[in-house]
Image (cartoon, rainbow over all chains, first blue to last red; front, top):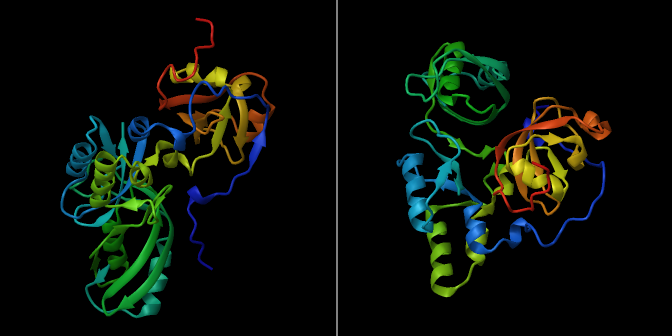
Length: 89
Length: 223
């Protein structure tokens, strides 16, 4: 039957090579980042409106969130709707 | 896809299956890449619905596949001609149409709620941490002491590795992570999972894109 899987769907297991504790004084779990840092290291799964270019949409995102740097993950063929991944910095 | 003349369902399904696997494509005139013939892999074509000359299908394909050209070529093989009528990207790597998919309106609402009410929760739902972008990549977790070196562009050496996932092949893209689950950098594997597991020294991965800011973890190498 048809297999609707992509290479990205490959199941993986975790193997342990060594153990060592991590220092709680440095770094931070992603969900716990303070909001400004969370936004800076953020990514948006954006349902891009048809019409405007990805580039224009990125400009809007920068304006809404008041961030200086943002990008997008690849353009779509002209005309269609579809999700775009926005990346912030 | 809209066909230019009616075709039997059986023939449509049969021809679509012929396009599963590697295909040749030359990017169209309106493209941002060099217009050379290249191979792209179609992982699956699932014909969902046929209504007159309209064919609704879901295509799983390699990044950079021109669906417009695929429809055109299917039309040629069917003998009647066809063109792409509508296109919606429903998935790209780890990104799908799920609760993380938001609109610009959602983004604006979430931002306003934070600014006006001091409530961050909507913003944290609408924006994903950058780690979401590498959910689909095999991960290698490293010691705290190796982190800052990687942030400075150093390649990952065997002693730095604590945990790793199966399925790492030579030259495949991997995500280098801290024990707290933070993305440090993207790397290109120089060894397989088994080799990394057994190695006591040597370069395990070449650091190709650093994400974490330098100084997040302390400098722990001799200069």
